[in-house]
Length: 299
Image 1 (cartoon, rainbow, N blue to C red):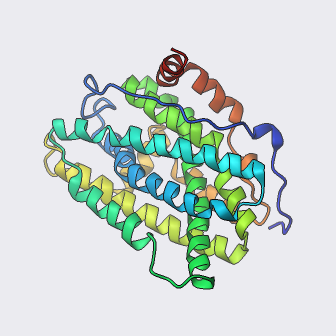
Image 2 (cartoon, one colour):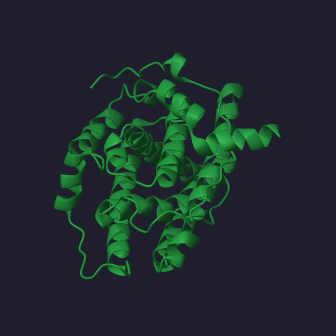
Image 3 (spheres, rainbow, N blue to C red):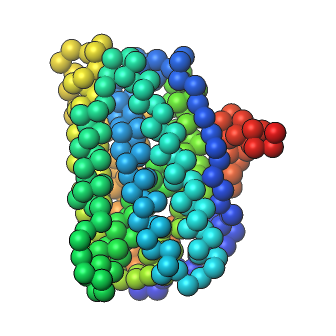
């Protein structure tokens, strides 16, 4: 591993803005990837994880704003906060649609809320070193999580197999709008971590925590959906199912996910060397939801 921190790629940085998107779910079927409830529900876990997680991101970042000594980074963080708040709202709005189709996510979302609000929430700590330590720990956790949200954003922008299989266009637009913005702001969380701390041991430790938590919560979410889907009987989730669909292109490939680990743990890592801002911006320029939001803003 290189011991030299890679320089950011300036051409990959764009000014961040929140897009006030909205989606209509009335025509979206329960299994929005036709004939494939496993893929549908594996991706549906995003709707359960992200609202609480991204509200937590915003909460933590509002606390860290006073520690930012760079005006450009502050502007990036404020743009990040705006985008993440909109992501949380957009995914939250899918939940009533799931309930209307007979799949109430409340038992699982209650667990996710506890995880972010209690386990990773504010703690009663004395001012000074202990309180700062917990804040920096959470900033590092967000940087690790954002590595994977950018990975998923890049994947869904390129997941043409979902189109080929007739996946619901409204759901694809939600996922790709969100994924494109994750690619747009992929460097902000890591740059903030470097600015307020940047310790390599903390980066490794919090990566291990974030990765373990994401895997645990995601597999629980898949099991919850399959067991509570009113149209399925005895459906089970397995790693083999995930791996097979990764090979088919309807889910991220297991090998690609594993290869992303040493990249983040490299001392030379910087997010701007991954993904393509140009591709993200191009999608946002044609996204039906993003275009409608722009038109409403101009009216």
